[in-house]
Length: 282
Image: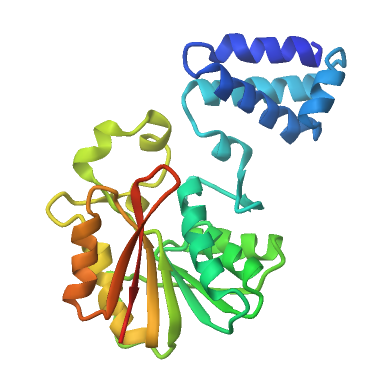
C-alpha cells in the first residue's frame, strides 16, 4: 500500500472513535515514528509504497488505538516542554498543564543556584525539564515505584541532564531526611475515586491508578504530606510548587496556611482553571 492509501485506511479504522483532528495527528505521529517523515514530506510522498513490515506494524498500532490505548504508550514516547521523554504504563503521560507548572518554576529561578526535589517524579518530566532549563540548579526526583525510577533515569540520560533519582514514599517518609532543598515541586495524585466515571477510557484503562487516584474521604492527603515534609527538608525561605485538583483550590491553600507556611498563592492555567499553587515557608 502507498502512504496515501494507508492514511485513508487509518481514517476509516478510527472514524467514530476519534475526531478528525485527532486521527490526523495520530496518522502524522505514526508515520513519523516509522518513517521519520515530516507532515510536509508525508504529503509529498503520498505515492510511496510502504514495506510489508511497516504495514504490519501500523496494523498492530491501529488495533491498540481502536482499543483506546494512549498513542504515547503505543509509541513509547512523548514530547514535554520541547523535550522527548520515554513513557510506559508504569508512569503517567505528561500533560500540557504540567508544563505550566515547570514554566512557573523556570521563570522564578532562572540563573539561580538552587536545590530542587521533584516528588512523585514518574517519567522524570518535571525534574529533567527543570534540569535542562536551570543549568545552575541541582535537581533530584523521587518516586514510590522502582520502574518509574528506572525510566526517569533513562530520560535524564537521554536528554543529557544530571538528575539524581531515588525511591521514596512521601506518605511514609520515615526518619528525618538529611538533604535540604530550596524547592519542592510535585504533581501528586489528586483525582477522587468518585471521579473515575468522568475519565476517558484511554486514561482509566491504561494509566497507573496509584499515580492518579485518592480516596474520596481524604482527597488532599498528598498535599498534607508534602506540606509536612516541607517543614523537615526545606531550607529557610524555601517554597513548594504543586499542581492541584481544580475543585479544591481554597482547601489546598488552607492546608499550607494551617501548617504555618508564610504565604500561599494559587495560579490559573491557560484555560482559566485553578491548577497550581506556590507556598513559601518561614
